[in-house]
Amino acid sequence: MLALSALTAALAAAAGCGIAFLLDVSIAGAMATTCGVLFAAAFLLAPQRGLLVQMRRRAVQRLEFSVTMLLVHLLHHEHATDAAEECRRMTLHRHLRWSEGFTRQVVRQADSHRLVEPAGEMVALTEAGRERAQHAVVGRSEDLGSRI
Image (cartoon, rainbow, N blue to C red; front, side):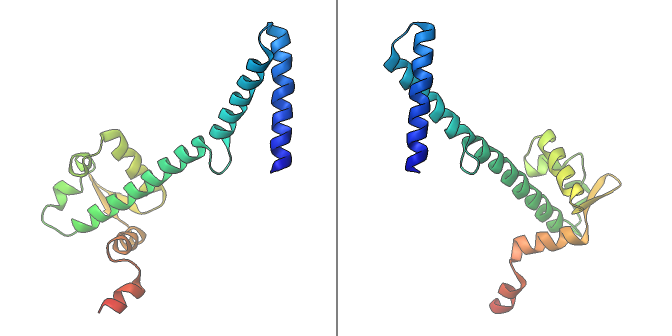
């Protein structure tokens, strides 16, 4: 880590010096600016903890959580009298209080993982979707046995 720090400092110093001579500006200021640019690049582009990776991870987690919430909603209304209204593709966004575009994205994601299937105007759970929704509500089956 120390060697990497020394290499980064030497690179920033050399690049800053070259930029300073090229633009006829302060050498120290150019070196400091180069260090700042390298820091910003590392902050944004770090492979595991960079800002862009974190943003992507949060978007994926949000989508996966939303798929689970969709499955729980469908499970809750699966055999209820209000299922025709609650599970209709065109009204899901109102019941889940999501935008129409986001609801379409979530349904598409769930469909691509074969967790839901179209049933006319309705969205229905597959067996895998039902299991995932029950797991989200109850937890692991071992936990259920220990609660009884």
